[in-house]
Amino acid sequence: MEDDRYSRQRLFAPIGDAGQAKLADSAVCIVGMGALGTVLASHMVRAGVGLVRLVDRDYVERSNLQRQMLYDEEDAAGGYPKAIAAERKLRRVNSEIRLEAIVADATSANVESLLEGMDLALDGTDNFQTRFLLNDACFRQGIPFVYGGAVSSRGMSAIFVPGVTPCLRCLISSGDSDGETCDTIGVIAPVVDIAASYQAVEALKYLVGDAEHRREALVSFDVWGNQHFEMKLGAPRKDCPCCQRKEYPALQAAPDEAISLCGRGTVQIAGSRPLDLERWRERLAPVAAGVKLNAYLLRAELPEGERLVLFPDGRVLVQGTDDFVRAKTLYARYIGS
Image (cartoon, rainbow, N blue to C red; front, top):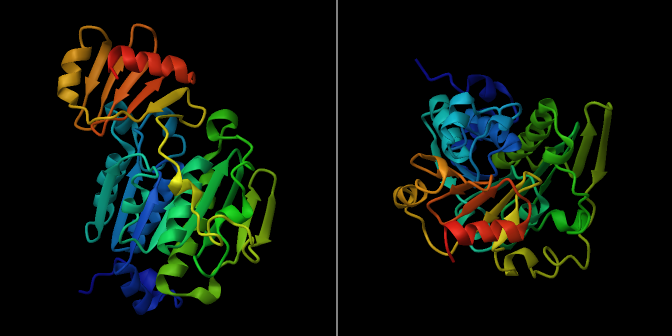
């Protein structure tokens, strides 16, 4: 009997057998495996995209479970990296495709390698700094970028195609974001699903080659306020430093040594060397409470009240403060220079 996994999708005329074959030959990269990213990944995997690369720097916490659909209480209790937890779930959904889980922070130093070989990049991030980084990298490499965002009860989405549409910088300058995040004003789960589904359908249109039906607008909506708007993308901004002047400013900037993670009371410090987690468990156990180690990260509760989370790539999260000076002080005290 012929495998009927994609039978209903094949019956949809704009995809059909030819489109399904194109999906199987496609590769997408999802950067950010939080609320948007988990929905995007589920759609791409279930649709039969041949290679799905999952990139995320964070790990699962209980506060994620309200809206990040691939995770459960076991993932949060174990402190598993989101990319790893998502990959485990998705392998049980579709074992016929390739999945790559990368636990890393997307920066100017690695973003182009993360996108290497990809046909499309999907935005699952929660901050404009990373979105501009993805925008610039995609336009330099000629890869379409599917933007999405969700906060409170509001969502938005657009697809930017190099050489065809303007880029994200043409619509939103780096100083235009208002600082509202899920961690400061909250978010309801349905708006996440809707925004990510808008992204996913534009991704499918692109991957199967249906340019005629691509939405050439930025869609925004408020599901609580019953509002829906579309803004035509129009022509590129003549002075755009990305798609017109080809300067790609986000790629020229050096990676930040320390960044605040989206209002979460967490500072991420990049570190300068890989960390042997077993060695650091032994070093921190005498001076920190509740030291917990798994194959991907180490968590340690500090006597000062903050928590350190160490990753093998050298990154350290200092949780419990937004103060860069204090975070760096604690890092120096326990990890060193």
